Image 1: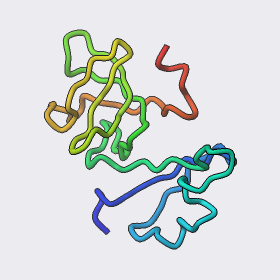
Image 2: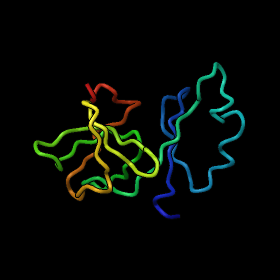
Image 3: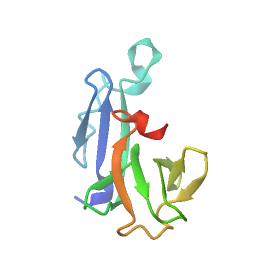
Image 4: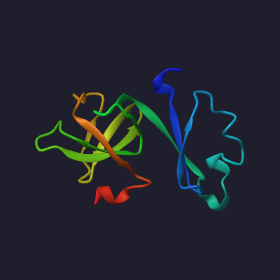
Amino acid sequence: MKDWHKMRAWVKCDNQYYYLAEDFSDWLDEDLDPQYAMDDLPKYELEQYIGIKDKNGKLIYEGDIVSHAFKFGGGKGVVEYFAPRFLLTEKDGTCDEILGLEVTGNIEIIGNIHENPDLLT
């Protein structure tokens, strides 16, 4: 399996991540399909691996909160997907294209939006 096919799902009722294999179509049955969830709320959120690792070798996914040192003074932000690229969105709303930045050794996962939203305040 190629790394860029890796996905994870934040399952809201369990409050935890599930890491999915390349072919996860069986996992996404009608009961878990966000289009048909009860109360008009999706039951899970899919997040894709963005194709790079942080300075500690951890895979970076959408929804990760990362600290970085590729701007003057560094900063932190959320990894988000805006087709066809991944962006790092900071608290002040500024965005940078992640793959366009020099990230080797300059980026570290410090949390994610589901378990650590306080890191963005």
